[in-house]
Image 1 (cartoon, rainbow, N blue to C red):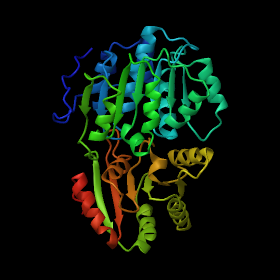
Image 2 (cartoon, rainbow, N blue to C red):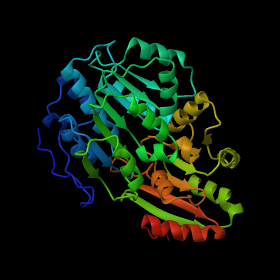
Image 3 (cartoon, one colour):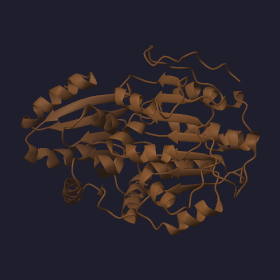
Image 4 (tube, rainbow, N blue to C red):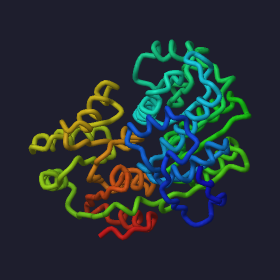
Length: 387
């Protein structure tokens, strides 16, 4: 096994470790087989940094760009730990993974299912809102090794007495900054308050602002390892950023022309749910295959929209920020900000949906004249010159 890097101070320079073959880690043959079948041969930077410490049982706080491969960085050590300790198909829950959105919870669960194809003794369930509680309740009461949950729905099950975390050994908080922005942190604190104090905690976030660090200090151990992967607080360097200025009334037609000439799937961000419906409808009228994704759509409609976009039936997904949290779709070539984002964090999260997995991507922002002041403030905050 390669020696773990020496990096514990969050104020040090950005850490960018070299890739490591997964076979060099002391992993169970069944997990190595699962990695191979999924096409995972070498680690990405966040995995190289986190996996050695996570395997050793240390607490970790890691800031990594969206699409950096962090899911495998925490799922793999959890699975190895469960296999070493002897997981049982209907035993006590040993690991809890909290995520801000149902889409992210489903994607984490998909990764677990893929990696555990050859380890049927490790079981898991995704727990999130928008679907009936009964199937989730039955799975929780029967006992599963890993629970992947959104905070609100998990609280519902806890109030119903369906959850038993007395044997829990690992807690993961994924996209901690998003959970804070979305108002979930009080629920997170209540959930953590019911967990065993003797546990391993892994916290991942696109950014680690002071507020996240302050609140996380009550959750992770004082000797937790800190990692900053990629440019602190900024988008991936593999993304090209462009700005196009036009009257607000001309944005849809300009976007339709742009999309006809662009290759690959495109994610368009808008501020409001009604705006998402309107832009998707106008693009379809202009001959562009587009579908809207927002919180007022049912779970089945949301899943159909995402799968239609992922499968190529729709070339364009028009989404609000909350609906797209945790959205993990390979191959997105362009991200378009239909309006200037309200915050630098929103810009970083939006454009991070492209330029993933060492691929290149393009971020386009459409700016009306009255938005120019907001654009200049965004440039200063993000550290980019958007021309």
